Image (cartoon, rainbow over all chains, first blue to last red; front, side, top):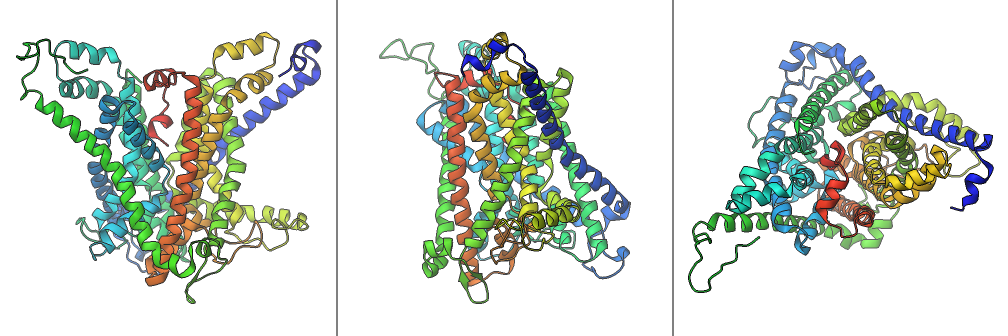
Length: 293
Length: 342
């Protein structure tokens, strides 16, 4: 960083050129980064929109993959399965996740134990999703000698969601001004009331954002469901049985040699991406309403 | 924040009765137990996974399994080298292609772009993280890979004198396509972390560089990039961790061939892909070998992520001398990506 690189020669044409080239390269890099999203959305619409119809959402896949398009069926069981599995996963991971986040911020703080928990939660966000599937397989399928079931898929997804919920809620709770807590404590409120009446309500919009993004992430996961919830054709609302889900059905359809089945995969993918985009949109709107973040 | 009693013998009138303090204590210990549960779960699963993997490790030996170059299900020979190599090649390709682009987006958003463009560009890049892995696989195998194949063949022919790159015939699913799609998939996280780190560069440093007559690019090179090196490296490592563990897109795009590919545009396998692809029908030793592959994958991602987190943490600590979490949170406005723990 010698000064010689800078001023002595003034703004020479060479420096000007280098500046323009570098800025051009940075802009080009940014544009390149935007291409994949546009391309994916374009092809999802082009290839998926044609197969969408009322009956597509209200019939089950038939498994007749070698016949004409009309007989392969739709994705009803997959949609219902995804909604149920993700709902149960959320019901498990959101309360626990918020609880741990509250502990980290309000009680654990910077103690060595809290930092250890924080570190392991961070590390957990990086654990491959298929490994969570294996964990649940070992604990609940080898462990109990039973077979695949929807709720086992939910548990695998909740393991995946937990670290996301914990970290996002923690970040938001840290933003709640300390003055709010201190005033409540000074007025004689016990710690638990401060948490439930002051801290959590103040942070609510931010918590909603983090939680919704965790749900959106879980809804798109295939790998943890493959060996926990399995796959099936028929619509099934019982979480203790095999359950179909959108990502798993798309994954199974991708490998099919039949064009109609691949078309169904595109349409199912469009549906899944729309569901996830809506969740993201709501999450962002909630974030906008937040006064602290 | 504990209430201290003023009198020693009797209870101060300011102190709560023991009964009223009960919910506080219950909440405190309940939540502590919850946090401890997280740690216990990770340790429990790790040992169970190791237990299930044991038969395979016992037969092949830990090193024999990890670095054996034959994965043959029917002969019950399980060496994970072809899988490990596939995982590493695709992940490093992803870093090679993904990190420069991600850093460029971060620089553009924090330093160069007009105010009104900032939010839309950020949101669009973050939305890449919302696309499910299986959709990347679907798009990759039916749109990207077939269109890319002629170009790949041309490169392979032109560079046929370089081993491992040129020479062979290009298949539609191959290492390169898998790496390219992984590069797209890790873009949002690397970009988000780089952006957050760049936002912490003190305005003084930038203004000093500009004041000395630096051009924008010189300012970025002299004031911004050196300051962010640790954080960007950490972000890239987090991206690496993601790429190593990514399963479904890679399973669809890598070709699922248990022989070690001979060149960049050949088919291969990865640790995660072999589990996704073979676990459903696996039994006995085969299943144990897949658990062992999972364990290798798990340990690999743990190492990469631990190093990454330490780097990011150290980069953040350098900013705030006391390392106070509160202070840190206020100095770095969390983005959606930050809050989502992408």
